[in-house]
Image (cartoon, rainbow, N blue to C red):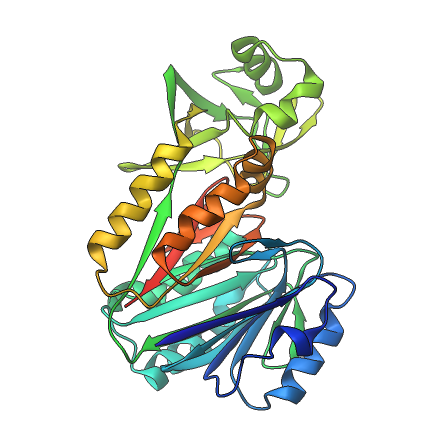
Length: 350
């Protein structure tokens, strides 16, 4: 298979697709001001080609912050669709995914699902993965900005756009990268939570804000940047899902991911991210001696952290050692049935 990426810093879609001739799939990564126009233009330029799109920064060896990027795939079989009413009842539309799975002949070794979501990610992923898991088909993706996504030339709100991709040239595999580890032996039981607002009211019976401040010796104003280095982790079997702090709400903490009463949380701290990135690259190269392309989603908070550490450009240069690496900056990352923060998820094509 072949992955082709084009971009325009000023949002010129025709410039971004200049190298695209015969795509079987298109991913659109646009900006809030031009998203509607880009969706229409892309459909006119490539009528009938499966496509999904969202709003967010994109990258290859450099970041496009406010323009447009297009990722085209050749040598694949693909179908794109949408589950609507994602905030209340995405399962109502599950027959679409079931039919699409049959349409592409989805299988464990050569098929992946990429999704762009507007919100309520955990529910959307549970719904999608209920179809994919029995087949062993992996999923990766993320949350786009401004609460809108596109599918096949149409724009949707309160929805999750997805594409099923069958690699006609070999295997596919998804990966997740975590640059954090547990800090000390801090372990909390969450309570006073608000599922709708993603709020943690208390940790071990004490106000969540004060607990966080006391351990890390930060002011209330510093909490929103301290989370780049010290997010929470939710224990999920042998894995830990990262939870970022979004804002302070009185004595509570509002997060980017839902926390429920009685959830077990750890406090995490930033590891040696340069070494971890090199390890991820080495693992992928070992697993895929013949690699065609990598598509990734990096969290906005990772982007901010790497930029603050003057590492973002170096990071993209490191990832380019894999060959054809492109992706976008999301507001939450998806890995199979997991909705995580401050992570990187990717799919690798043989």
